[in-house]
Length: 318
Image (cartoon, rainbow, N blue to C red):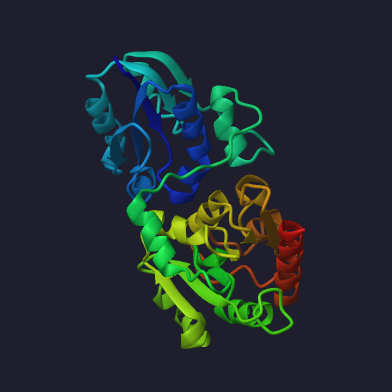
């Protein structure tokens, strides 16, 4: 009889991606197990192709945190070999489980991948891994040409203060794809959520039509498959940045009002360029307002981003 494993992970796309290596470890070390994944709705597509998947349970926030009661009700009728709770919900204490692994408090100085891995006492932490089906692979192959290099750009984020300005991205693209750039004549794939296209309209319009690949609104599994085929990805701190790093594409994350030590893109082919101001200097400024939607990324110049991209490119190709 197959054993059942319940994996409770993040609501946000980035957090779910960063936890995926832990799930991959369980898949590998429990070859006779069936898996149930509980996550937020935005992240759910990332888990549809998990091997030996029974179901994905979408956690939808409800008043008074009754979404946890709904999740418990959906899980209580089953005996679980392993329950992993990265949300620290306490839910696993009210389920029949042979083994329970509940994530502890934040670890100072640790990356989120390392922090999640500590729930199972894994060191080193396993790299994030996303499974995609044949349809997603085909969509990625159709989106990205194989006869020209492609520079992927993620110009949006879940918070306007984390977004480098469109004109900076346009200048960066022009320099990297110029005849003396690291990707001369490259196609440019623009990526983001379906509701984010208008925020990036200026950047989209700045890319010549015959070199532009508009992938705004592409489903996450297909986006992952597309990223695997790109020469380089550059984007703000976002779920797409983490998806790119997980795909193995060289990934440069742009940081300002978020802590890179905790959320930098994970992997040997990843790097960070950040504002001259530190995270603390930005978020502890007297006029800081977490509701602010204007960019706090102006402390990162185009020259600095170009140099960071060039350094990453040489490292990955050398």
